[in-house]
Image (cartoon, rainbow, N blue to C red; front, side, top):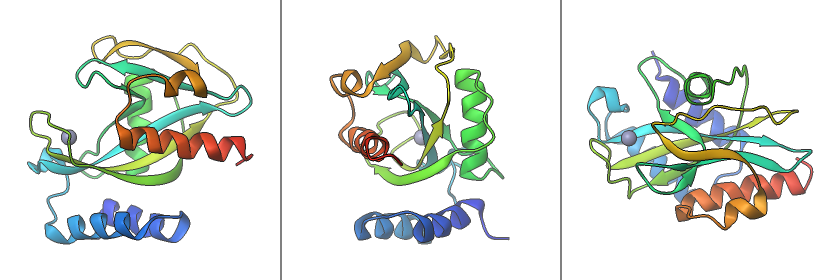
Length: 179
Ligand SMILES: [Zn+2]
């Protein structure tokens, strides 16, 4: 059976614009071995990032992450048998108390500077979740100093990993251009 991660990567190549370097980086990792998950014991593993946004108000739900000291949204490690989208749905529920049924893949990002216990590299599928309202979401107090809805300008003033900033900029640009 083909791994849900391989299938998601093939879909990404077909459906979203990716630069050749990113495609190569992900392809090389997928070829290296089939131990794709943290739970399999791989330190270079596949994850999801989730940006929860409200297009009308041009706001994003984001928090100040305790362990990394950077600002980021929900996300996490893909677990056994999950597709990246299923991880998004689970993480939204676990981390934000938010029930979602769908999300839009918009990018792939390789983080080679994770430096966490049992994590050396993260290969992230980045998804966007669009909400029509600005619900009072609950970010896990154990994971975030604070979290809330911020305007795009406010978010970009905060401490962000460079590649995370690029992902935010891509989504903000899409929204500004009506996508
Ligand atoms: Zn990890």
